[in-house]
Amino acid sequence: MKSLLLFFFSVFVPLATAEQVVVAYNDDWAPYSAKGTGSSAKGILVDLLQEALGNRMGMEVKHIALPWGRVQEDVRSGAYDAFITVPTAERLTYVNSSQQIAFTVEMRAFVNRHSSKKAEIESVTGVDQFAQLRVCDIFANGWAKRLYEQKQIKVQYFRDSEVCFRQIAAGRYDITLEAAEVGRMLQSKDEFKDEITMLPAVIDQMDFTFMINQKSKHVGILARFDEVIVQMQQEGVVREIVARHLSPSP
Image 1 (cartoon, rainbow, N blue to C red):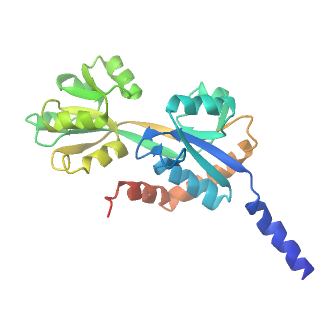
Image 2: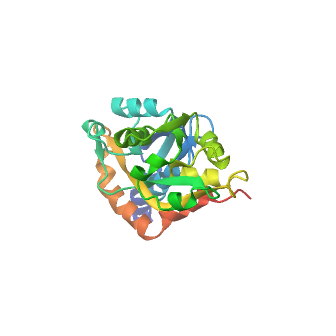
Image 3: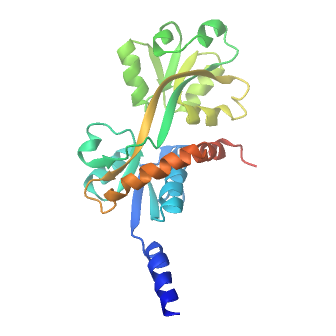
């Protein structure tokens, strides 16, 4: 009996008393991450890390949603442990990154399926070909803005993606660049499902890794995280999470 109790405490107690890892996310980037109840986060990236860290690695995870600038400041300062995003040189001065890519955000072109420039639009595989088209995008899309500036593409900016999609559906603009899952989520709305389509070419992509503040007590979990995320990808779990968030509500 005594040996059974020792076995129970050695195996089960560490999971019950595991120290909490706090992950911060952008609060305004649905379906990848958004504000949930209170300060909590919800979305594709949240579910992905909950599955990896919580369900498979046995950690207690707290998911916090904040404005993106605040997320970066708070992970840098050590107020929160981690985030999931592109591992830039500047970020790697204060975080350690997973070696494996945790999630890839594809940048795709969305267009009016009834456009009079249909043949020209359907041949698009890169931003260079946007030059002869009427392009719209959103002010917050810094990634696309830099790309447009490099290629000297004229763009009309709007406050959010839904407004841009509405302009394309009305035939006022031809094309926009959008993160694939954001565009697919909008595309499923009744007002867009018969008007907007996503082109097959991947224009560019952002490879997200999981990053932990170098001073966090959890920084040593990254090697295990790499093993888990590879396993999840091989099992199709990441695709299932994306599909769940893009499925129409019952």
